[in-house]
Amino acid sequence: MMNNTMKNPVGNLPQGTTIIGKWHKERYTIVRTLGYGATGYVYLTRSSKGLAALKISENSMSITSEVNVLRHFSKVRGFSLGPSLLDVDDWERPNLGGKQSFSFYVMEYLEGEPLLSFVQKRGMEWAGILTLQLLTDLETLHQEGWVFGDLKPDNLIVTATPPKVRLIDVGGTTQHGRAIKEFTEFFDRGYWGLGSRKAEATYDLFAVAMIMIHICFPKQFQKNGEGGRKQLEEQIDKDAWLKRYKVVLLRALAGEYSSAHEMKTGMLAVMSKRNPTPTPKGTAQRPVSNKAKQGPAASTSRAARNTGSSQSQPVPKKATSKGWMETAVLLSVILFAYFFYLYGQVM
Image (cartoon, rainbow, N blue to C red):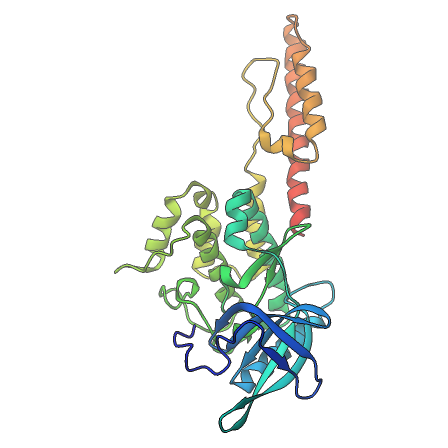
């Protein structure tokens, strides 16, 4: 990230500034700043076609590189790996010495909510679901020969209806096998001494694990004297949700997953074991978890409770045993349906 914004001629452009494309003559009026990084500034703009995100930089090569990435993504059918590319042009800005020319591109404005605030408002169940969605998109990205690189919550947004995590700011996206172009220390395995900064799938998967940790510890902790796996494992043990995924997290941190699909499979295995069928205790009525009630089988679970509560008179021992077996089977079906309901949300 750039610290000194005062010296950047395309930084901190005031609201109302109009950028006119040299070649396409499209006009973009700045609404506000969306963010900035090592490769340039991103502004929310208004044009004749509506709201759009415009990225502008002094470095025309970085703009060209990012445009090529977005164009490549647009060819991947059935997936939204990043925002759609809308325009590419140059802006000639008047100054004391004449005119300065800056390259820019315009992309789809993804309106949504930051990942962390979304999970904080809606609960940790969504942390797992959105992580699975992210791993699905990363698998496609990696198969196309790219690594996202600077993967962090700031570069993720959750769009609505239905909630979907989206990758934004492709400035750090790097072709497989090359050196990572951009990184943020907390999410970088090199910083933690757990791997190189070579662009490969395991680099992104390490960052996914760190994002999961960051969701539970929003105030980023610093690396201590020991650092590495031991410190991160201690942080995982401090949170009940993280401990549930401890095996998955430690494998991702150690670079043991060969693909995003493999990590996703590990996540799904943990999620499928979250609501095991209870062991009968000798009573005719079985409680149904709140989580099951929220799934698509809620009406079935209510029917199961009503059936159980209707047994107001003592029943013979054989009938009781048979009833327990039927109830256990029914609950297994309910929980199985709920698991596939969650699975369907992330596919």
